[in-house]
Length: 320
Ligand code: UGA
Image (cartoon, rainbow, N blue to C red; front, side):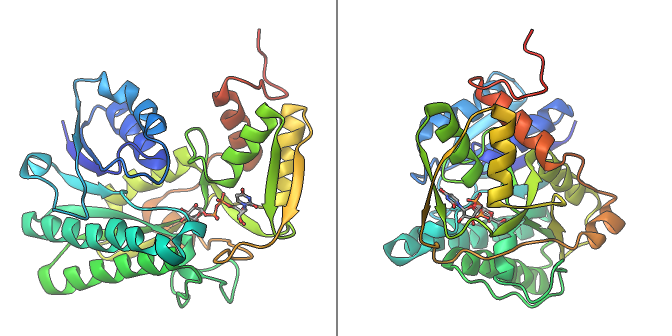
C-alpha cells in the first residue's frame, strides 16, 4: 500500500485529492496550516470524511515556519505539495506578505525535505504564471509574465523547484492548474460566489464587463492529472492542466441560471487588479505524456457543483 504526503490537505483541491487517494487504497498523511484565507469550518468539513478513515493522518503545521516534521515523511512514496495562499486579487498591498510565507518560503522548505529524502514532489502551480498570454491556447513554453503578486509567487515556486533540482537532484513535476471549480470550491472564487448568491437571492458582483474567459477545469479532472503526474510525469517537467471548457463569466452565469432555474442579481463593478482577460491551455503535452484528458465539461461540472450545495436541484436531475 503506497503512502503519500499531501500538503494543503484541507483545501479545495487538496481535500479532493486526499479522498481520491484513500479511495485508491493509499495511506495519506496530510499537512494543513489552516491559514486565515477563508474560514476553518469549511476546511474541517472538507476533511471530515477522510478523518474517519484510519488510513488518513492529519498534522496541523505551518510549512512557511518549518519543514514537514519527520513523522510526515516517514515511509511516504511522494509528496503532493498543494499548500498555498491562493487567490489572485488579495495578493496586493499588505496582503502580499502571507503569499511570500505560504508560497515561496513553504515551497523552499518542502523542496529541501523532498530532495534530502529523494522523494518526488508534485507541485500545484497556476495558469496565473502566464499573465496576459500572447497566444491562446498557451503552451508550457510560452514566456511566463504574471500580472498579479500571487502569480509572481507561483512562478517563484517553480523557479525554486528548478534550482533545487539542478543543485540537489530534486525530482519534481509542476502542474499549472487552470481555474479549478467543483464541489468544495473556495468561497472567494466566482462560481462558489454565484451559487451562494443564487441560493440566498443576494447580489453577485462581476469585476469588469463579464467578458473575461477562463479554461475552467473540473476538480476531479485536476485531481486525476495530479495523480498521473506523480506516476508518469517527466522529472522537472511542467504541464498545463486545462479543462478544455473555455467560457466567459457571462456564459457561465447563464448556464448556472438555467441549471438552477433562478435569475442572478448581477451588479457590474470595476475590473480587479491582477485579473487576466483570457486563459486557455494548450494540453498537448499532458495528453501525450501522461495520457490525461479532461472528462467533465462545464455544464456537467456546474450541475454537480449545484447539486453538492444540497439547496438547488439542477435542471435535468431527478430528485425523486
Ligand atoms: C483562480 C484561482 O483563484 C487561483 O488560485 C488560481 O491560481 C487561478 O484560478 C489559476 O487558474 O491560475 P481566477 O481565474 O481569478 O483564479 O478564478 P475565479 O476566482 O473563479 O474568477 C474567475 C473570474 O471571475 C475572474 O475574472 C474574476 O475577476 C471574476 N470574479 C470572481 C468576479 O467577477 N466576481 C467575483 O466575486 C469573483
